[in-house]
Image 1 (cartoon, one colour):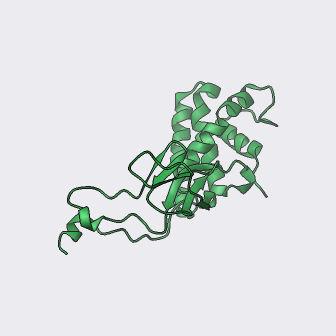
Image 2 (spheres, helix red, strand yellow):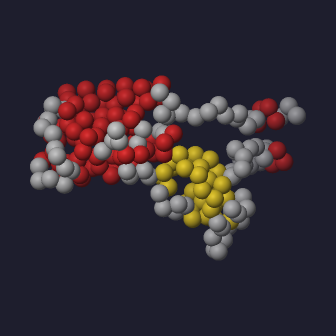
Image 3 (cartoon, rainbow, N blue to C red):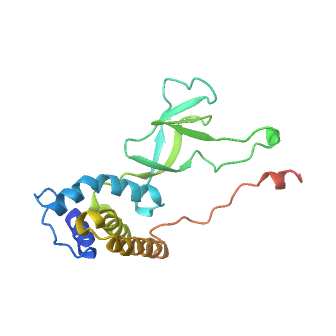
Length: 200
């Protein structure tokens, strides 16, 4: 059964011992509080971890306007972009020729663009803004509910103790998601560090 916004909201409210809602747009104190923070909390939780269900790939065309300096190309980020996961064809590398005098920077994000020397099209893997709860992993839905409960505990219950309990549940839910592989990454071979290159 697909997750719904109301289900996640009521999961959060049940953790606080609060009355449930039938719709987030209804005229109740709980619904108004949830509606006010829903988008912010969702994007915050999505950005905080590498959720497998939110990973997305794109090939970006170069902008007609080149960067003023420092890089050769710039690429406009997708409208649903939240957090970069991987850019280009390879992982970050060390500039062997100049490692003693400068760092090697493959790309940088400024505003809504990526600046890089990579040529077009630019391969990008990123955390996307997944707004439909029906597409969420069940572990994310639980983490989201815990985060909402933590954020709204004092406003709804006027209890700092409830907030502490919700914070503990949030941490436990994140750990559970990691164990379930909802959050994580496949083994990655890291580039050689400068002290290794110095022995070449």
